[in-house]
Structure formats: C-alpha cells, structure tokens
Image (cartoon, rainbow over all chains, first blue to last red; front, side, top):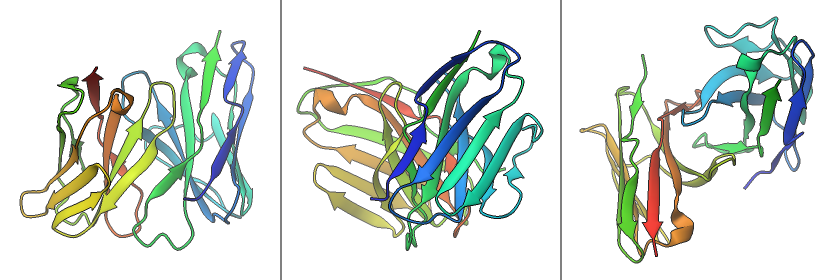
Length: 117
Length: 110
C-alpha cells in the first residue's frame, strides 16, 4: 500500500508554544490529505481536509486559526498547533488516499502524540 | 448525520477461536466499507475493504456486507494474541471522507 510518513512521532511542549507536524506521502502524490485527532479511547475525529495549493477545509468546531494547515506540495502537508494548551494534548494522525484507490481507502501516517505541559 | 456504530467491547476470545466484529451504519448511500486495525498508541492500518454484498475473504479475515440491513462485519479465524487490538469500522459514500466508528477492542487470550 501507499506510504505516508509523519514527523515527529512524539512532541512535548510548554503551554503557549506552537508545534508543527509534517505529513509526507513517500511514494505517491496526494492532492488531498486528511488530519485526524484521537483522544484516548475515542474514535478518529476528522479535523480538516488539506488540499494542495488551496485553503484547507475545516470540520465544524475546529478552529482554523489555531490549527493551521499548509499543503504546499503534492507530497507534504503540515499541521501547526498554535498557542498550544493542555487540552490540545492528543494523538494527531494524517492520512492520504493512495493513487488510483477507487475504493477510497486511506493510508495513515504513524501519528504524532502531542503533550502540552 | 452519518453514524457508524460499533460495540466498544472488549471482545474476549481464546486463541484459535473465531472473533466476530460487527458494525452498523446509518447512511444508506454508503458505498465502501473498511476495516482498520489499531494497536495501542499506533495509527490505524487497513485490513480490508468491501463494497459488494456478501463475503470477501483475505487470509484469516472475512468481511461480510449486508447493505439491506446496513451491517458490515469482520470475522477473524484462528485468532492469535497478536490480533489483540482495536478494530475500526469506516464507511464512505463515493469519494467522500471516511466516517469512523469508535472501534471494538479485541482481546485474544493465549
């Protein structure tokens, strides 16, 4: 299957700082990537859809000014959590559809666990 | 609102048994159905997908789809302790984003 790489895997930061998470499609071009957040024992919640060369589409209740998404190339999307607070601590996972995936399955990055102190 | 429902479990089965995981969905227009496995602290990995009524087999895994009942299941034969994980059901309509269930935790005891 398609390979999606995410970095960093773990990040600990102080409250008020900003954290950037990168998501790369390694062996295919992804015009669309998806950012999910998962709290402990909860399901994946879609935060936003990242579109190459255009603005991201955010789900209801997700603050676009707090979670900045940039999709500057066909292989890289970034999520920046600005002025992070402890309640932003979560597991952030990016995903992309493989090329030619008519069925629409998603391939996920390894995830980034954010802990805000 | 599109919903995907799963029993949170845990579902406990002994090693070698068949584990049966179930999922129902509310959007009758859903077209593709996916099963992902997620180990604790890891991101989901695709096990298999199905979009036609009936059964689809892949090794020890069988996905079953019944669109009339809006029901999809995953059977794991000869369950192994390494199968212990949370199994996420996901559906989509056409090329839309996936809607995930909350997942069912499976525990396979040696």
